[in-house]
Image 1: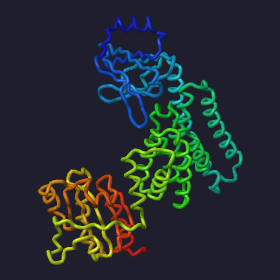
Image 2 (image 1 turned 45 degrees about the vertical axis):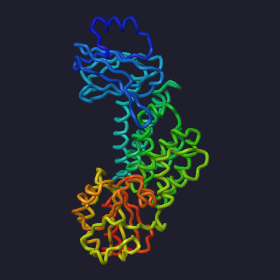
Image 3 (image 1 turned 90 degrees about the vertical axis):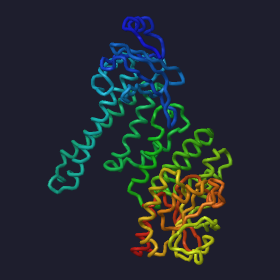
Image 4 (image 1 turned 90 degrees about the horizontal axis):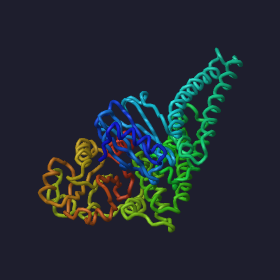
Amino acid sequence: MKKFTATYFLLFISSFAYMQNNIFCKFIGLPNEQIKLIGFKGFGTYTIDSTEANEKGEFVLSFDKEDFGIGYLLSENNKSFVVILAEDENLQLSGVNFELPESIKIIQGKQNQLFDQYANEHPRREQCLSAWDYLTKIYKLDTLFSTQQVPKQAIETEKKRIKAEDSLFLAGLTEGSYVSYYLPLRKLVSSVSTIAQYRTEEIPATFAAFRNMDYTDPRLYKSGLLKDAIESHFWLIENSGRSLDSVYIEMNKSIDILLTNLLSNEQKLNEITEHLFKFLEQRSLFTASEYLAIKLLNEKACTLNNDFVSQLESYRAMKKGNIAPGIVFPNVFSAPAYTNENKPKKLSEIKSTYKVVVFGASWCPQCPKELQEISKNYSSWKQQGVEVVFVSLDENKQTFENFIKPFPFISICDYKKWESKAVKDYHVFATPTIYLLNNENKILLKPNSVNQLNSWIDWYLVKGNK
């Protein structure tokens, strides 16, 4: 850890003002605080440098070539200030602290000055555009104003001027500079919500912009926007006002383009597709996540991580419409509604119209909550012909029995954890994992939560919307 005296700080600036890769700072509100410089790497972050400010809040941080991109200064109270870490560009900042960005002045660092200028001007332009969009609708749809051609034309002229001004700023950035890459990317990602709500005519062009992105570009990995770029792309497709079938067609098209782009880099292919797969699952876009899974498993030109393959295989083997494997129930068995005489010995012996199979464990953080929710709904589900089987991945008999004691449904465990035959047969890679089967063990649904399962039961069974 480095600590600079005021004298040394001034000497350091004057002596090395033209050296690369240094950030000289004076924040009067951060005396004697530890400051970190954090960089981005794909979906994660890492510490580039750290130091301790002197009693006047002066400090110097350094970065190397591999750190070029976006970073941020982080104080002890977790407040931050974003900076561009640029080649051949020292950065000099002054201010009070990171909580008061309006107090921060960029004394030296051209790319950071341009970034700061655009970060202030672009939101104001967007606010004005939103206001003009609102007035446009009034002057087009409201009979009181629709005949007024002069203001309608004036509004359109002003909207074009604002857009042209924004585009002119971006076009004027030095080609090859990091800021010339980062600002258009940031604009694309941040505009998605507004485009979906107010500027729907821009949706096709925005789709094209996302599809034309090079996801192997190292600059993207250093931008801190990798996660946002992927999620914003597919969120916009989901919220573009299309029918669900059309949404999936567009998602499949984007997946195809993404995979073609990533095939040359297996590490990034694994990293990005795994994140996208989880995102689609979380948003219950199962048709798209299944398409991604099958495409990846059928791709011979790449090698996937073993853990990721297990997730994808669960889609191929356990997709909707397939017949789920049978499960033989071990001796350890609990279900108050059953006696020794009538308790089933395997899944196929359960005579209910529907079966919910849940894989979980006492050590799973989310499982107790989900199982308690099942318990709460169990009685009403039973009235609709739904039985529940909980397959535990616990390894200790006493722990298992204590855990399942409050549950009214069937609970089984063979104490083999991930080596359990049922766990392997169902390609379970995480807990909780839930499947809804019919009386022939055909997979009807793989819900990502009990709430989703309960909604299905309420819609199809209780209300009869079959």
